[in-house]
Image 1: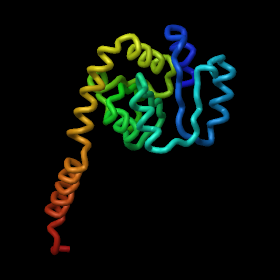
Image 2: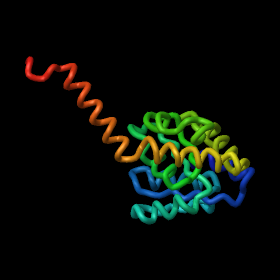
Image 3: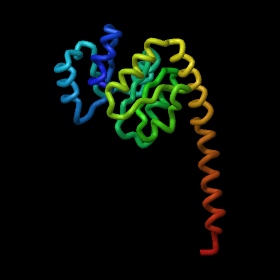
Image 4: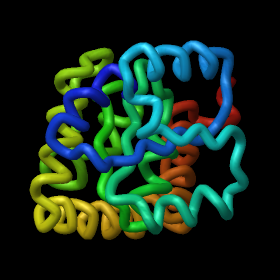
Length: 169
């Protein structure tokens, strides 16, 4: 994201990037933002509560998840459930949760140019971003609610039991 920032700021100089959370790379990321001259456009929050995260989703123009590895796309689902447009890398679970052009924008993992283009496209076309966010909200509500997940989980157990023919071991 920091590497994509100069390209984004070239077209949208007032963008503020809010990076929430902590990790072992935090100081390196801050240093790189300084080196690239974009640090003034970044806010590093450190750890935030779920309530603060949800408030950020509500006021953000978009949420960006440029993960290199993501086992499940829960972060994207949280943003989608909040009605926030998303730009995500095609990494692991993110690519399974976000449908490119339909519920968000997917970009190439580790590719700052691709990420910048996804962000710029979303900012340039707020009406399309809103349409994708609305579709994403519907998917999050219909496919990723606990009732639906429970039905799917039960079906997996039933299928597994039927295949194993319990009692014949």
